[in-house]
Length: 159
Image 1 (cartoon, rainbow, N blue to C red):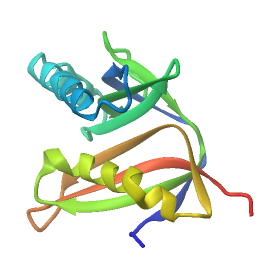
Image 2 (image 1 turned 90 degrees about the horizontal axis):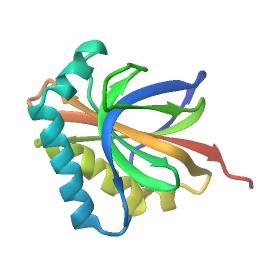
Image 3 (image 1 turned 180 degrees about the vertical axis):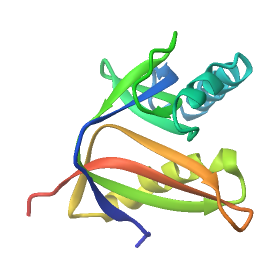
């Protein structure tokens, strides 16, 4: 069984991000390419830095459902009015928190996401993922590696 915890968030919160709609959720390679292109675009045009400067400087990779379609982006905690960005609602409740560590900052969020959706959610029988989104942050750890956490809203399963 993988390492995880359940944390309770007492109030709704918002995140502001730049991202892309994913037309075909199962097109893993195409979606990864679209996501990487968006990350490059907002890094090069300074939009991500602008958002990070408004917030606490912590970047998040965010998966969300917008108009029934999968959406993936990069953003910050809080609601900010920045051209081209969307403000996403995250609801109060129980959150599954899955930590991870690794040497590659740019890959760690995807590795944690893969672990969660690649089996961990099926292993946890007493909670079910309810969305509408999830977020992952990565930061430098003291040992030269990186530490990250994915947060997903869950509900206790009936049982």
